[in-house]
Amino acid sequence: MNQTKGNKYLFPLILVTSLFFFWGFVHNLDPILIPHLRKAFLLNDLESSLVDSSVFIAYFVMALPAGFIMRKYGYKSGIIIGLLLFGTGSILFVPAANTLQYVFFLGALFIIACGLTFLETAANPYVTVLGPPETATQRINFSQSFNGLAAYIAPTYIGKMILSGKELTAAQQQAMSPEQLNAYLSNEAASVKAPYLILGIIIFIVAVIFLFTKLPDIKHEEEEETGLASFSGAFKSIKLRWGILAQFFYVGAQVCVGSFFIKMSTHAAGLSEASSTTYLGFFGLAFMLGRFFGTFLMRYVNPRKLLIIYAVICSILTVIAIFATGMVVVYTLIGIAFFMSIMFPTIFSIGIEGLGHNTKIGSSLIVMAIVGGAALPPILGLISDATQNIQYGYLVPLICFIVILIFGINNRNTEKNGQPKLSVNP
Image (tube, rainbow, N blue to C red; front, side, top):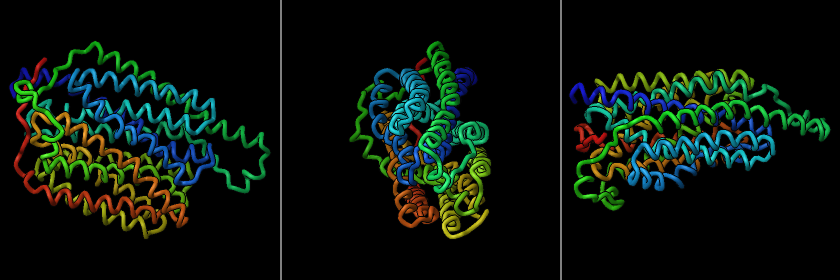
């Protein structure tokens, strides 16, 4: 790439990379929302896992419409639509808290996630082509590192604004009058209003910036010439088929591990809610550092090989988390965050390798696989409720990491770069 093109790519890359931070920020409030809403609505683990389900089912529902809109109107239009939905859903937390209806919170989260679907469908492939093909995996891991930065900031600084630290036992709840209990639940529900209102306003401002910023539109030369993009053509790629499967299980693993971190910390290590939130911040920090370190290692280690190594390590750590006790469990979960950090962008990059004019379709299908974050946490919740032991539920992410390991082993031919030929139209 010459210097002129490099300069042309720089600001769009910075602007699009900011999206990784924003969706990472809101996603990493979900592990705070789960224990928070569990208290506010007196939920069990299965019911509280519906927070994740309402978020990640949106990816399945909206991924194809998002891909269609971007194929027809371009990445920029998709990003703006995504930001508008994101901001709207965030602001809807205010009336949801006022009504004290759990289903309204789930609805607001669904709208946010619809917006995130547009953003992720656009931003992930956009970053891979804003630069040389041979550094695409490094570039997407670097951008996703800001997702990790948000994973540290959200629980560390915003989590304490949402979680009150008031933990009532069943006996204390029964001793309260209906009026006292209602006041307690109302206060718990209301604490989300200010953080999400501010977030919504910021997202609308970002949407305006994108609206008035000229971005290059990335197109495949083959698509310009023939327009032969199709689902059947995309599905001919074995990398894509395996990528969809691996991404389903990866997202399920990430959501299971992160969303029930606080429950694991209080159950296995006896930590308070406030202390667990602090360690959740370290969990996010480990995720961020893992992304930066993994991106660095990819200069010297093939991404597929690194994925295999990290999948093995995550599997071992998950076994420890299931059977250990005390702070070992907490530290083990933080270790899992570090080693699973590169998995999403690496699976994504391998999955869309060589798709050419089918890249946008392939991107949409892999984003649809994020529905794993909706399907697998309820299974963890069911196991936890049935056994009365949240640690046994972590058999679910263990199986997920084993599937990712198989994905890495089955994609040996990614040693050679198979990026499609691309052109840039301003």
